[in-house]
Length: 352
Image 1 (cartoon, rainbow, N blue to C red):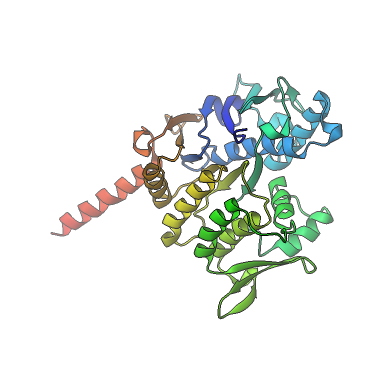
Image 2 (image 1 turned 90 degrees about the vertical axis):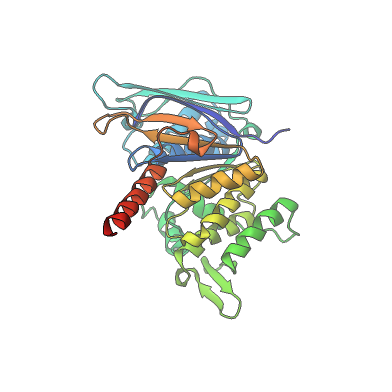
């Protein structure tokens, strides 16, 4: 059976989007756009739907039960008071429709600005037909894992649910058997980037980074960029991130040295080659360029999505898609780089 993957997302009046349809690549999907253009909204929506399927218990398998289950995932990940807050609140737009299609499966739901939870339309929660999702936020959590887990256990933190989901996956015990082929193919580039090993002390509920010649250090003593790579290494090592998964990574370039841009893009490509569907949101010029180049080298399936407003005063965001980075008509990252380049040219020739 082919690996399950997310195929399309259709939106009517969801948060910043009036009408949009996104057709995804089974490999790499890249969202780019200015701040407040809805990149993270798309990641959280897709993650919440997929996570709702993989966490559904027996009580959640009825239509009413799954509607409540999915509503909770959306409310907790978007940190809103009720589901109706996710409907566009522009005058005349009060009803929202969402449909997510997978390979041979689909979930659709709708709600209005007044609703406490969604109303399900079509729904299919057969787990083999949906990818198991992992969400990496902009902030790493290896360094605060100990306090985070205890605070979550005591309900002392109000964070997006994706943080508790990630903590649970990071703390999963690694198997003692030999590494399988897909693990080796992913751990090799991760270990090469990190130049260290990740150790989880289950008793202390703490993570350590072990570097050659230095020894075992608390995760908080390592650079944040290394801790982000360390999270991925741990997730692959304990098989929380595997074949038939979907990786949602929000701004992987944050707190990462620019010299990591090429291996980071290579890492993202490596995940897609091991049948992990990848969704990233990025502002980084170098990550975008390397993704474009590396995907072209091996003909890796990739789709770029530009989120933009026609005018700065527009309420709604539009979506443009292309398989080639340079086919996008709206590309704020490249546009800003060109602007900087022109400024440098003007400055140079002006001095002459």
